[in-house]
Image 1 (cartoon, rainbow over the protein chains, first blue to last red):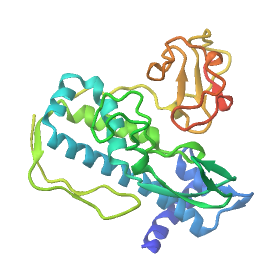
Image 2: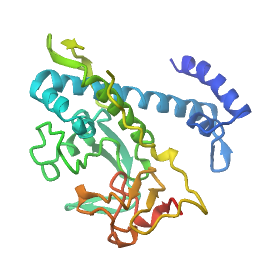
Image 3: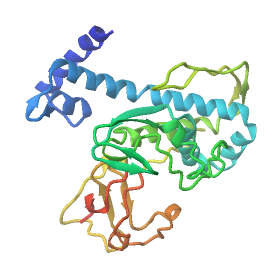
Image 4: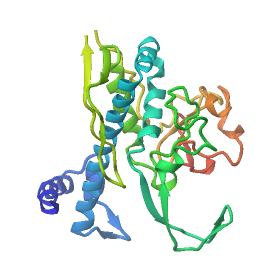
Length: 214
Length: 80
């Protein structure tokens, strides 16, 4: 599979090196680390991360949103009545789906967190799934509420490595639902939904629905 | 009939300008240097208890970008 990505992106790299423009592909193709160009595998890996992270996550979140709508008909009625809730619906969908379930990070310095000593260099499993259901942060965390404000989920991560595409992801999903909600008359589950089996990027494998559209 | 999709610009579409569009304090926008999110003084952040018209300078010193946690010192003034 790596070879397929490499074959595809080598042409992109050549093009963006010859004619850089204001896009992420040009930044990667001309990027350096410690003053040196990235090696082939690092560069191709950046493209793979950027392309997959920008697709799986929003599609998983959108599928999860549809699953919620299919199980909560009153929610669709609420959105149709008040489309201004759609940005909040998207934000809550990101919290609810948390498509990137975890990252492992290494501690940059010694730290004590709630009595637990963490030494510099320790590897930490940061569970975004758990954080986004934290009852100390979210009232009734197991309820889907588009009205949450602020919605302090960390579905895009936090800090210097926060998701590069977070604004685009929100925009994509808002545009999708702002187009679809006025036309979607009803949606219900036609069978049982199934989740993918992954402990990293995850989401629904199948959301069988029955729906009516204008 | 299609729904109207909001056409407000994405953060990266907002660029700092010089010598034009000078905004008064309370009307300016500040951009996070990490995630490009915008603090718009005119809107404030009511969901975080920061009212419309709150100047960037009047945000608490320990205020951080609500999107990524970047400190207040790492924002850039737009519209100057």
